[in-house]
Image (cartoon, rainbow, N blue to C red; front, side, top):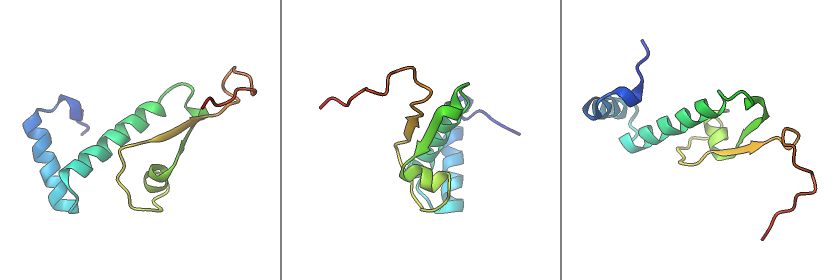
Length: 94
């Protein structure tokens, strides 16, 4: 059974987070942050042009490859420049 987290009452979400804390030993804050990261990744890679998105950085090493243990608030995404119609001569401004 799949339940949409966002439709649950605050009390039910707290109850679930507390149960997850007991099972994992992680803080409820870390578990909730990881849930939001997962939700954002799912949304990003559900887009019709997702094959042009690259998930990189420390969070990708943790969530994508299980190489490091890390809970992060940020997600590093890049767009394949071949997908963009901008010229390759773009320069970074300081």
